[in-house]
Length: 220
Image (cartoon, rainbow, N blue to C red; front, top):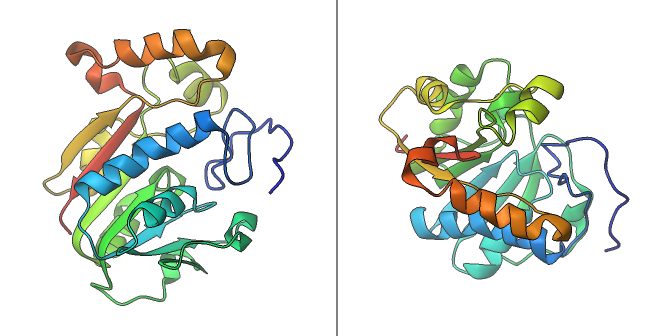
């Protein structure tokens, strides 16, 4: 598929990246960004069935499904994404539904993931209580942490996005949870070297809580 024109907006649900690239397969720097999340899912989530709720273009689920043929994945979003028409792996399907009217019964999936979804919901606590019931074993919440020196001005002050600190994320989940952190950017080629320096700096223990993604893993 041809790459789309450069985007000027930051479209979270469609997962159109700030670098302006769209289409499949993505360029290497975007694919590497997505692979970081796929690696975490491959390492920490159980095998079996997985619901990717608010999947956007389905890129992460497409990578995970390709690398895990025995895992059955369902990607769901409110509107169909054009990338869904690109032939997916046999173990990946897509469906349209509202988070508030999901066509699934409780315990329908072994694991449920939500990436960059909660901060779009008017009442994330209430929505999460219902969503967690769909999972038998695990729920993974991936939320950008924009309360750090790299992202705060652009994402919070300028774009006006609402995001979660670790403290707020734990409050929303309201149950025992393990918080993992990642520093994961899509750096343009011209900024690759300084970008690596930024990423490595936030790998230092004193700064780990400021990494730009929080990944909350818990039992339903």
